[in-house]
Image (cartoon, rainbow, N blue to C red; front, side, top):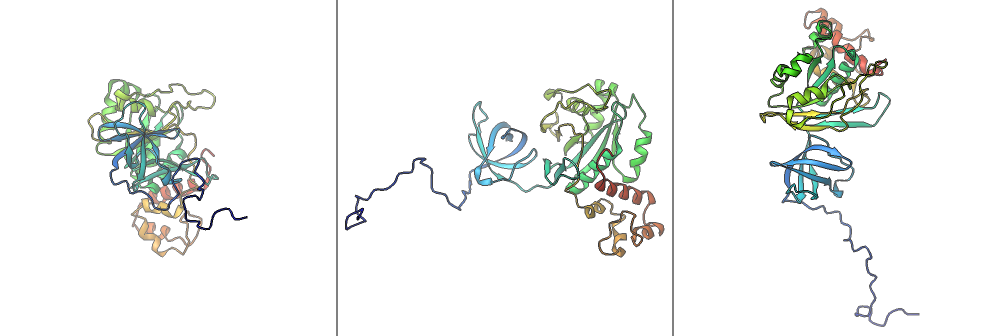
Length: 338
């Protein structure tokens, strides 16, 4: 039976309504030319706090961005309500190119990487000299992640009133990593914050370290108006602190000359995402010596034809530098804490 009359173009044709009332899908994405620029300060369950000019704005990611996620430190473009008033919500429509990325995996067998912070210039590796005991392999892994992600490392040693720093510093002197040593008394009177702050000026610095090493205590001393809850308790059996910082947070230094990013305490720092061949880029004095290495050489000291031994023997680099490179390469093949 004919459903419509002889003229199907007439107004009597019934059109099925769209019950959801949504627009037809299109592959053309909006340009959002009126979007304003901002910086992601923290992320909490799908809501992102962003700095737009001098206002903090709550936002969510636009659907057209797909699975691309914004993290602390990202430069983003936003539309919608940018007033920063209570119960308002903006939308992130673009995520800018990243100059650096600090990434980690849960362990060396985990193929899923987590981006900790974007666009940081420096990675402050905070380690206690005692309570809990320092873990050099954790430091090595953070160094690898920093070099691979394009960040300059900074070693921050805390609790020097409980143990001397000489032995630990001796192991890292060949790497040329800058360092600062602090004590609890210096944290209380402000001397430690002043010395650390001098190394942070005009930079975005991400702080990373085990729970209980005094990382958040140091951040609180650097940015006293935005104090975060600290742990202050280290388990006597495991030697580890309890996580109190649950999300990364970017905080401006009081003088406005830099940013501090406090990150949650970590118990492992997997390097599944790091290609060992890129670690050599952190050793410009050794890199020319690799030109004579066979194809696919790992430079880890297990291959007799590695040209780096001859390069060092010829006086082109300090032997301690080659030892440091191979120690870092070895961490890529070991589980942290083994």
